Image (tube, rainbow, N blue to C red; front, side):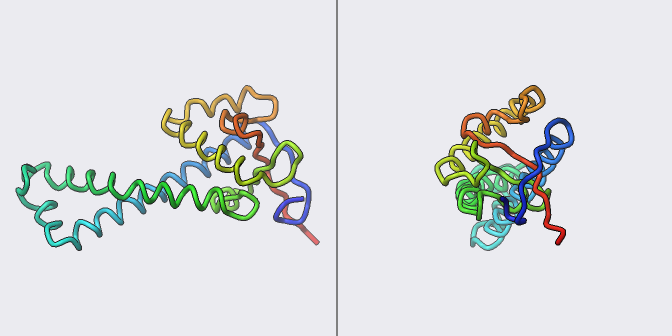
Length: 167
């Protein structure tokens, strides 16, 4: 059983992979926009922030200084944002983060139930490594008979399409 009250539908191949890729890209986009927004707000609210963005302070050149300051601030904000991503992914009900829900996907363990918290944490770490490798390892899902990416194999999980109850 899944969050919708019915058994998940197994689905492999390009359709499932397309949903998985779309969910991951939307999550990355939201993550990136949130980090950039917080970094920009932080720079504008700090007393020296506007000078870093718009002026020549502490060795920043006027032309490239604003971009460099924004990138430095984004790096500062990225660590807590990554921690938040971990908490949302690992502690969400049934291990289904918000983007998996939006795209009608669910994560299950080998027995077909929701994965344990350690499995979710391992899956999240593997997903981060896959992302750092520009998503290339995820192409393995096309070759795996169960449509699993390396982070799924590592954590002993599968991604399935969730079926909604129509009662």
